[in-house]
Image (cartoon, rainbow, N blue to C red; front, side, top):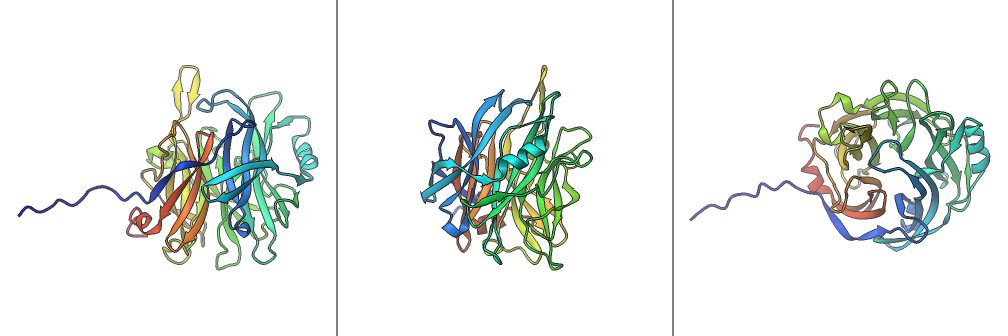
Length: 346
């Protein structure tokens, strides 16, 4: 009797939903970066909508102008785009930041965090400012706070772009460590060459006040990982209730892009994919980044970028990612299958 060969197929860890969770409508050709309010059973949140685009999303130098809108749902698989998000003091603060030298092109890439002690909603977002007289953009990590989506008030940014350190955007909120503060992650940049997106930590004692710039914890040029050789941006950290890998550590979702490619006079971006990483939030260090992507959407031509995770039951949850900046997809995640993709020694 012949023995059956064991399947050599690698564990996948996710199922791509066939429907689109958020589709563009007659107002917006491109939508992305959904974030949800857990107090509404994740039925209400914020989504970034592109009002205009100049250039090609695959070529360095394109410019998007954005608005943040409310997103509402009657099921985890479908959200409608609502009215523009109203934030008190938005105009006053962004005009002050822009001054006469910069052009504010709209809030981007929101993240919602709920303070369990006060039940207040904190929203973080990118504030992009383009130079009027020369090439380039600076980005600050902005902040607003309120009881809910309909009572938000903007404060000063929690992290300002720094000429010596880089930009600040795309936050990933870490748990409190044993010393009573957080090492939050955020996307920054390599100021020496401006060719790379990097990951830094911020030491945070008060989520609504100025954060302290910390160390660079992942630079694509320092690792031989092709899928994230050009750009790195931290995504959601998966809660211990979903997947537990020990004290002081969490599994996270990392968004990574292949190295830039030179094509004539243009610089073309590589594929953006979703990967995994292990984060030591006790010490603010990234221990491991997956050698291969975790998710590349079946319809993606250049971008799969994760922004929100929702735990549904023990060992299962839903990850939301936008595809080619055009729509948002949901993926069901399986904790036990994901564990098989992690290093055995950690």
